[in-house]
Image (cartoon, rainbow, N blue to C red; front, side):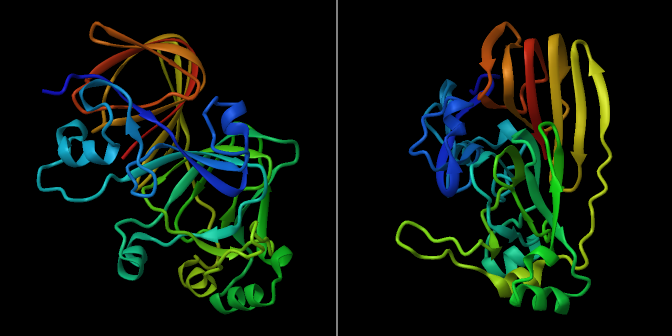
Length: 319
């Protein structure tokens, strides 16, 4: 019988052409190189499944736990869907490609994968003047195709400046790119489908440009661009300030700021927790766990109440 305890996860580090070394300097992860762009910190995706670090499931992947122990996630026995969410930390030492992701229907019909990709970003840090691409200025699909074909990127792309603490919601169909000098925590559907629109004519170590996916990009892009209307609500529980960042079809995401003690009830099927800063003690029944910046875990369905004590900042999510 599985004990009611948190599921602590080992991040999966991914090298990227635009990556840097902040996942080591800021979060103390053992990065494979100084071009490490992503830490997949809560993942059951086949391209980078997290390994469980503790308890009776130690050594198994999150995908294994989802498949073999559905009760931990309040998953019905006849539910054969894949784990729905993926959490990453990204270090953009250089600009990411301008890209767009499909919705569920397109992903299933065209790519034969279970999920499209709606995502959201919490800006952990940003250098002075850092900006990202969010949306475009084309009014019709024909105009979008024409501007892409002619490379009118300055005219087409919509850019916004960001700073630490900003939150950005990116529904599928939104043209976007994280800019140089930004570290984000990303909560997304468990999908790795990316259509590149523009990659600054970069080449890899072998002198090759990365593949673009212009036809599918234009097919899936929302035209004209629509700004998401996200209502944020703040709540105080003990010494914890909770801000609901987004609540929509695929996920609900919160920012927690703990300065003291708080006891909480679990009101979701399972809860994903990432510690962005500080340190705290998590207590469940009579068992305590030390958690700190860079710790990522899941509170499974059997945990009904837990308490936190310390000074820490969290991003928390559930389906």
